[in-house]
Image (tube, rainbow, N blue to C red):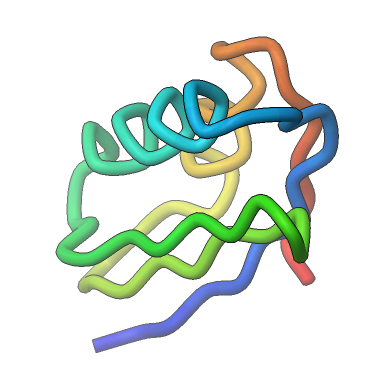
Length: 68
């Protein structure tokens, strides 16, 4: 099981957090997601996850992301 931390920019409210969580959960291999509005971050745990797919999932929701 791998743990990946992402920096997420552009989130301003709990709706943003929910949108990022939903997008990340849809990526193959993702098992758990924790998005932190106050830290502008997301932590994803799972198997055989593609980091580029995680970033693209967040960016498809209108936010900016990068692997920490």
